[in-house]
Length: 388
Ligand SMILES: Cc1cc2nc3c(=O)[nH]c(=O)nc-3n(C[C@H](O)[C@H](O)[C@H](O)COP(=O)(O)OP(=O)(O)OC[C@H]3O[C@@H](n4cnc5c(N)ncnc54)[C@H](O)[C@@H]3O)c2cc1C
Image (cartoon, rainbow, N blue to C red):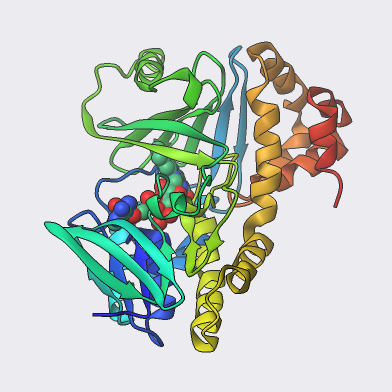
């Protein structure tokens, strides 16, 4: 078997890329797990845009119309919209459906097969993978869709993300007081370097958080959060953990190699959401791969157009979101509470209500123009968001 294209990783990004390319090319996906979608490493909060991009009939567990933002000093800002702002999906089903979509388009998925490494020559890519024993496969183009700890990404040299955050969440057999609002908790005692959440998911509530790498494992913070929410004794139905790469990776292409999704650092830095950027980038990858395979131009220079394309599609949010993150991680709890007092005004609600979870950083210039005193938190970084 010598497919035109091997995709390592049958997660959403890899399956979407495969389903777009499989009608015209022989595509093989290597997936180290035995099934798609397990273990879940996601909160499952997505925009309707993600559901449209996926083009599958994914079960929606709940609809979210707004958020309550909890500040360290006890202040709360409640933002609610008339329209659905996000859907809570069953992430395991989402991944399974995308894998079926790829197979329906003609891709072959080899489960329980782990990519080990590869070498590139002018003839093509020779990759080694483990299926019990170690085997070889030849292909023309290799796509690394192997997630946050991408081995294919590492093959491009010094290609790690700027940072990782560590996440941990539990599904609890409880119902909150607002079944259509997500609670977000900020504060250096609660979730240093990120935030915590309590998300109503229909039959259960998902409570979790991420913390910056240097703050160690998130368990202790989650225990503290559950205590403060008086949920320590609640029945735990499931537990998920995972890492999120933030700040992008230096390169998303090389000779006969393209990276996508978490493997390419395509994650929104403000929220840690990777589904929308990864699925959007799949179209850019499919276009580039199709041209490259048809013209037999698979060198790094020819493939560099992919990075320009995906950055045009989703790069602005990744760039500006990371600037906002740099401001956020430096805020003391007192500064966060200062921000609460600036933001807690009726005329701000209209701006916040327009927020789009796929473009959270686009709120920043609107807010700064409306409330210039926000610039004091970082004149340089926040000021840069005002430039076109
Ligand atoms: C706690 C947490 C909460 C999150 N919440 C959200 C959210 O609410 N909304 C959102 O949009 N995003 C969220 N994310 C991020 C989201 O889960 C990722 O961005 C998304 O899964 C990336 O998709 P992907 O296809 O790039 O990678 P993955 O989904 O990680 O898929 C990669 C696949 O590659 C396989 N693989 C890895 N190495 C190999 C190998 N060597 N050989 C073969 N196969 C391999 C893996 O088994 C996996 O199936 C969250 C992440 C975490 C950790």
